[in-house]
Length: 77
Image (cartoon, rainbow, N blue to C red; front, side, top):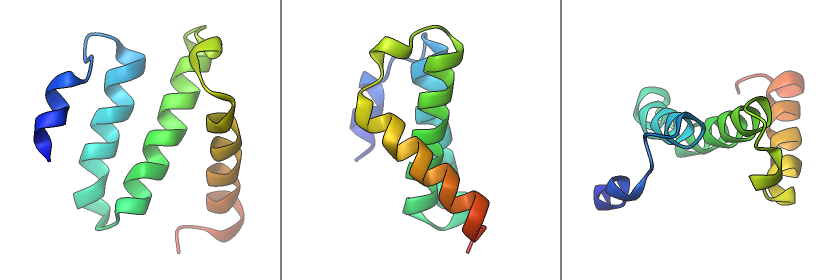
C-alpha cells in the first residue's frame, strides 16, 4: 500500500503537504475518513492560495465545502 507514496511529488508543497497530512492524520485520528477529509481541505486550500486554482477539479470544491460544513456544524463527532 505504501509503494504509491513514491509517486507523490513532495517537491511541490501544494501536492506534497496534503498527501503528508492525509497519511499522517489517518493513524493519529484512528479514522480513514478524517485523514481523507483533511487531505481534501488542505489540497484545495493550498492550490487556491498558491494561485493554482485552475488545477483543482470542480468536484473538489464541492467536497471542500461539504467537509468544512460538516466540521463547522457537526463538530468532530
